Length: 102
Image 1 (cartoon, rainbow, N blue to C red):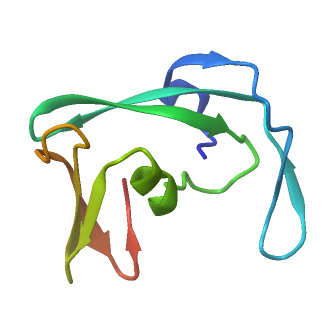
Image 2 (cartoon, rainbow, N blue to C red):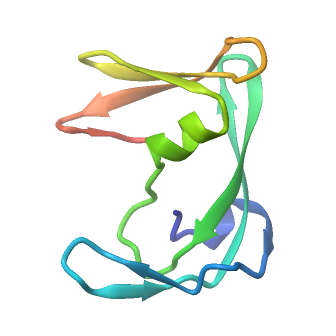
C-alpha cells in the first residue's frame, strides 16, 4: 500500500475499496498499480500496489512478496528481497530504528 501517487508508474481501478487498520478505522483505496524502484541489479517493478492516500507511510506486505514467489531475509541492519525467477538480489532495504524503509 502506498499513499504517494507520484510513486506509481501506472494506476488503474482497484477491486479493493476499503482497508481496515489495526485500530478498527478504515481508509479508502483509490486505485491499484505498479511502482518502479532502483535495486542493485537495476529497475525493480513492484506490481499490484494499492493506492491509499490517507496512509502516513508506504507499507510492503512480506506475505504478498512470498506469495509472488520471492524470498525475504532479515538481518539486524537491513533486509534483502530476492527475485522469484533466479534468486538474485532485487532490493536491499536499510533498517532505521525499528522500521525497514523501502
